[in-house]
Structure formats: structure tokens, C-alpha cells
Image (cartoon, rainbow, N blue to C red):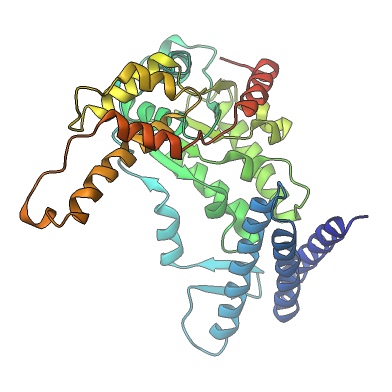
Length: 389
């Protein structure tokens, strides 16, 4: 067994011990076990900086740090000082205060980003699939006797429009938009995480009585992926998610609650979760026409010289994501504005010079796509194996 595997094994053991001690009310011993688990996880991250699971290990360490702080607050509360969380020895449960409820309610965005279908260049297949699964049933549920998909999986390279699509459909059907990530679900105490999941879905069901509700889970793989380092609390969270999703995708249940998951690593998702997402939609990098439309949109807001060739830029940005293209245009803007400030003329109200083609060329020399072309093969292979448009 390698040194890294030994560290992983130790981290798992200490984490399992910590959770067991935590449940038994042995707070001091639980804190010690949590700290040992944190030490092992961070040692892996520092010793093996290129390890694929480092981001997951850092998240786990932060979860355990949070629990340590909570346990320490519990000790303070026994001396009579006010804390945000109290521990009921008779029921072995955590009692949440108003501040915790407020923190949970903060996940609900009353006004999702103001994005419309027309603001998203290309992605016609993805738009059509989402309209069929979400928009049309929301408008005429009476003509869907067999029900409709409630789980939508959006996957593809980062920065290609997954979040924008989710926001656009929320605006299209005037839905309550609830955003979730692994950290918000797994925070506070592992034993309460599954209750957070139940509360999340209950909030969505309640909101859906007035208008459709969308639960948007970013970085879905962090919460529902297959991980080597997993403790019992996380397993219960995953099982609770499966149970809740089964409840909303039941064809006999006409509730307008949708779960839209976004991931850059669909191949790490556990098989039971893949099945719950009846629509699995690939969101690829923009093609030439889409890149040209994006450039027209972004560069149209700038003052440019006549030598700026949008068609050439659309060709030069082959392989770039929409987010990458936005960053290039923004960097060109920063370049000419910086020149104005550095010349000392900005305070006098002078205007920056126009952006030239050379400015964009310089930005392209300094920036590469945020994902490799080889990774696209992996996405396309997974799509061919699990596609469900």
C-alpha cells in the first residue's frame, strides 16, 4: 500500500470514529478524531498537489472544521453563554436557531439572473430539450397524462452555459430558483445534512404551490459522485437525495418541482443518480457561429477601430468556452483603460482610445482555453453512452 493510500485509509478511519463519537455525545474525543482526519486530508493535498481528489478532500476537511467549531460552541453553551447552536442530550439532536433557518433560506434566490433564451447564443439542442421537459409541461400540464421529466442533467466543459440555461428556464416559467452546492448541504453537522436535504425539497414543494420551483445543484459531482473517501453521514445524504427525487419524479405526482444538476465530470456520478435525471443534456463549447454571435454581443459594447475582424476572431477562438471569450473581450477593455489611467489623463475626463485588432491578438497570445481538447472526447463518449435528450 502506498503512502497516499495509507493516508486515505487513516483519514477515513478517523472520520468514521469522529462521527461515531459525535453521536455518542463524546465531544472532546470527537473533536480530536475530526482534527486527525483533517490533518490526514491536508497532508494528502500538500504532499500530492496534482491528486485528482484534492478538491474533494479540501471540502471534507472544511466540513470537519465546521463541525469542530460547532462542538466547541456547544461546550460554551453549557456555561450559560449564548451560541448559534445548542445540543439536546435527551434527544441527541441539534436544535437550530433563527440564524440557521435564515442561512438555509438564503439559498432561495427570489430573482434568478436576468437571462433570456435570446441571450444565449447557440445551444439549440439543449434549449429544445429543456423546453420540452420543463417549459411546455408548466404551461399545459393537462396534456401530459404520463407526466414529464423532473430531473435534468446538464454536463459539459466549464463556462459553456450550463448555469445560464438554468437561469433562462427559471425566468421563462417564472419559477422560484433555489441554488444548492455540496458545502451548503454538508455544513454544520453531518448528522443533520439529510434533514437539510428534506428541508430543501419541502421548501421547493411549498414554493411550487404558487409557481414552479427549480432546485439548481451546481457541481453535482461533489455531492452525488463516487468518492473513495466517504463517511456514513454522506451516504445518508445521498440516500435522502434519491428518496426525495423519487418523490418528485413519480408520474402520479403532478408537482412542478424540477431538479437541474450541473457538472463538469458526469463520469464520476453514481449510477442511481444518473437514472433519476431523465434528461441528460450535453452543453458543448460554442461553434463558429455561436462564437461570432458572442463576439458581436461583447465587442458591440466597446468602441473599436475598423480593423477589428470579428470573423477572424471567431476563428482564432476555436476551442474557447463562452466564458473564455467574454474574458478576452474584457481583458482588451482593461488594457486600453489601463493605458488611460497610466497616462494620467483619466482624472481629467479623457476617453480611452478605441480597441484595436492588435489588442485582441495580444490577449489571445496570453490566454488559452480553460479546458483541453482531449477532454471533449471524454464528454462525447459519456454522452453517447448515457444520452437522453
